[in-house]
Image (cartoon, rainbow, N blue to C red):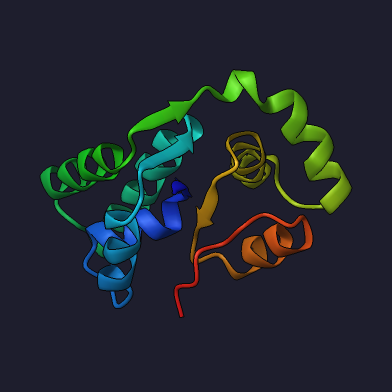
Length: 134
């Protein structure tokens, strides 16, 4: 099974949050884990928020970002999918950066793993497989 992971799921894992174990179990069963390349920028931005809001140490944030990057086996270049993501985002009235995850799933016939409830609903409407996290 190919998994497309988004940053919400990766943050849950590296920060040791409540759904960490179930997410790790899903990833252990994956043959390949992918994400659009914008994942790296989103991951870095989330780590900045942890520092800004909760004053997390920068070294820990850098390690967490490296861990999030290491989870992914292959990054899909955003410049290769934006021409499909922008029209999709307009059609579904949702940000283009999330549409890039949906496009990645469609192109690679992968299962989405996310904690974003709105993204899950959109994926379901588009007949994109979503991992059950509970």
